[in-house]
Length: 305
Image (cartoon, rainbow, N blue to C red; front, side, top):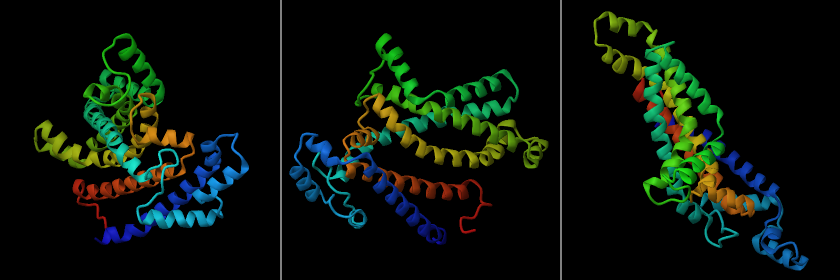
């Protein structure tokens, strides 16, 4: 509880800063009224719609109104869909969570054991191959990998769907594309953390006691090596959500990322703002959970310190 009370003011400041940035940046994209009415609209029609949407008021009044309404859970009405921006976000959120969750599971299921095995065989062919694959995985852009996957597995081999959402088959390509970067990151950090822990005195002591290799690796080394891995995984959740924007666009995945891209193109301010604000809130909550997981992994860490 003391930890939460100490972090709460920081979280409020972060979310306030995000709200200012989100509100200001979307208005740099242009006037949504011109987008809605078209270039041929009369000045009277433009002025009338600006007044209807409250865009004719001073910017600080617009922001104050947005902030007060947002604190009550009201992010306004979508200019394009004419329905609550928050309800649109909530409708698309399960698809994004499904995609990001599948990518995260792939990253942990592949990257963590591969990184650990590479650390147990340093300078071997397997270790060299893992480091090379991790470098390639971090270097290839997600949109390029997605397009290649569509061409190879969809257009040429006809093995998997190239877009949309529905069955498990629809999830495979976008999840693998989104996970490719995360697998490389998790493998690299797991390898580095394990190498560092394997050189510690308590691991050498455990070996000297004659404990089985599996017990030394899993019970002693891996538990301590997971702390930096947990840190990078928590940070990668934000990367997953941002990377989902590109992946959802490439694979026509009906998630929050694709909704945000469409909203930016159409200057749908309320939808962009709710996407940024709620995503930032989710990221803040994930960071809180990560700090609490530290204590479970290493009792020496005290959240109240």
